[in-house]
Length: 345
Image 1 (cartoon, rainbow, N blue to C red):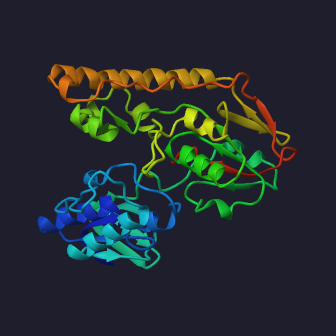
Image 2 (image 1 turned 60 degrees about the horizontal axis):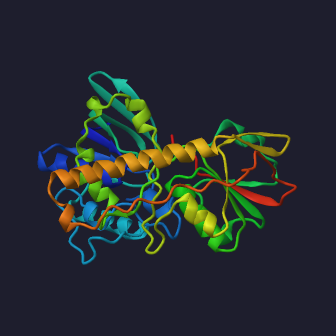
């Protein structure tokens, strides 16, 4: 059986960064990748996707961003190319097209079984990403057989969906972006909205993700978080990196014709059921957004920067339809597809 000190599973940004650090310390290792380097960025992202983080935030150990557009947002394919160049520059020992079938404890280390054979190692790094598998609710199996079901990992472009109306379930970054793209492409979109995190793309002339860095949110340690499981389950920010597409909120989606309804709760006899919690979820998202922006304002004030920055400009409250629908007969109303933007796990 082949042996090495460390096996890294996954040749994305985390796996490649770990490889670089191990190599710098003289630790022999292998990276196992089921596809090619940056596989998920190449194969499991839609065509128009751009990263949510500005380019200056997308550096890697020993490879800070040095391009001409630090405040821009890379396409998924551009980021994949960056990872491929990073792997080549560091001579990363990647075994691509190698699928890990299982891992077992073996003595003081591990036995990693792949479709190419077994590898023994002393330490193991799981770098498979937080979004490797799309989550679908159990009631997805109750949808009418004639309605296509896809996830953000499958979705590529509007033209690939079958004819008919589209129900997008989930209003975080992926669901909101896909709903907007489909509606603009002439589809009739309904968006089911549960818990979501609403923030502006920029606030007081600065990217909101930069503010998270500036005020110290990125420095919060996992062992200082009161409820770590809840923190890990928080929805992604309602943002997009596409130029001109911010803000990406429920108000903006409604303005272009997207219908919003409450959280999807189930399917009965072909009828989609939605909770009556839309107003509460939106009020909660508005409240948390304003608390966060107030935290930024306090930091600005405490550091004497108020005269140097634009005045606070809070987004308007989310507009709620007068009577959001609680049921939709999917087949009767001509729905051809459901997009499950319901997270990963």
